[in-house]
Amino acid sequence: MDPSQEEPAPQVAAAEGAEPRRRRPGAAVRGALGVAAPFAASFLFSFVVGLAGLVLGGLSSTASVSMPSTCRILSTGVDLRSSKVCELGLLNYRAKHVFYPSSNRKFRCHDDYYWASVFEVEYTEYFSGQTSYAVAEAPKEALPLNCRPDFGVAWSTTLKFKVNESYSCRYTLGSSKADIYSDRLFNCTSEEPSTIEMLKRIFVLLSKSYMLEDFNSIGMLGYVMAGVVAGILSALLITILLRSLRGLVLAVVGSSVSKHSIRVFACRLKRACLLVAYVSVVGWITLQYSKMIGLKELLLDYEIMERFL
Image: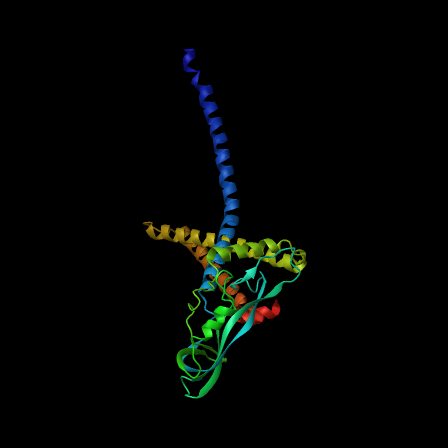
């Protein structure tokens, strides 16, 4: 027998032994991805939900309802007004004016003073036709320092409106406030915080929470662990739902459906129903908790925020 014909046998055996070695790194990578995928999906899901809440919070309107009318000016004057500006916190992160936490500050809030033109007016209510009295101010809030009116500008503004003359105005329902001027009267407006500014504030709040002593308490740690577990479970259930839908599509597309595939479909349908039940229960608990603590009233009433600050 020719010895050259027996030489390939060891090479084939070596190739067969090398093939499982090549499969091991691939299996390890797939296993690592299988473990890391739920965690990555959990963090991504939490981030998307946070952004959605931020966008919906920005779309909600907290302005009071105002009605058109005609106001007759009774008196004019200039007065010093103030607005409270507080350190960034959970209850005022949507405010127009906040200052960021600093170790050099001794107080969490301070009053920001500004000059305002004050008008006492008389108007006729839109629905009842009764005569009522209100106060109009210009500006209605503290404007940016680079264009904030001083005493002279506020006084010259009162000269633009004559006593006993009538002007178009708007009054606020349920309060003694009126508006007889345009917001562009001083060519200066106080704009709402941008999305980038809101993200910056949220990042500062999250960074600050890790430095608080309350964060180390058992209650806060329990809330954090519950949030992590809920996020992981949500990611796992979403993954199960997607795989169930994929199996459903494959079962429909297939030409023949065996009993085994029917059992698999029933099992996956149960998992999908479990996911729907889980989301419904979590949503209901969240709504009940928000009603219990009055979360909606806290977000819509800025005066209540200032009391807590």
